[in-house]
Image (cartoon, rainbow, N blue to C red):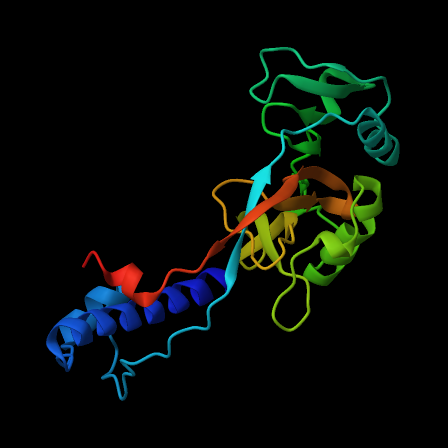
Length: 271
């Protein structure tokens, strides 16, 4: 939903920008054809456009904030607090350099019945991420009766509330989270599923084996837009509501100044 909203906003802004370009060079913009609009929105149109507004008011000027990102810092107390919360036992140690997130620190806790499987909490000096990982991918299946054994995957609302309850353990509060325009916490949800056919009816069913919720870092006078995991906290839940993964990558920001907003003339001067 968020992506669609942003795409719509982008398209609206691009329409407005094209309109200004035509106005500046030709007086009255030509009426766009159907092909022009389909190329702009990226897919065929199901019906005619009833109304297109080609004019947009000039936004009010404001100074834009400039931030610097401080280098990530290892906090052993924070790492141990997370480990104790998740019952990951042991003392922090240096990660082996073979890990793709090394260098950094972790607490590795092998499973009692299988030393090749383990849980771990970690802090990556390479990426700045603090997190938790387990070998549990959420898959549960009754082979004899051919049916899923997954139980208690949190709903969207439950996953969000459990993530918010985790914030103090991570050294965060809801004040650190980005809000929507209506004051609600901005969030996204993902899921991992397995499809199967019911034995009796042969109907195709979906087994949700893992559900994740993402919340985002609040940035004063801005919002988090990034490629990758930066500026987000992701928590994944599996059967019985168990936490399977945590990944926190909020940046340590420092305000270093402001920049004046460019005028329309400056933006279009090179056209």
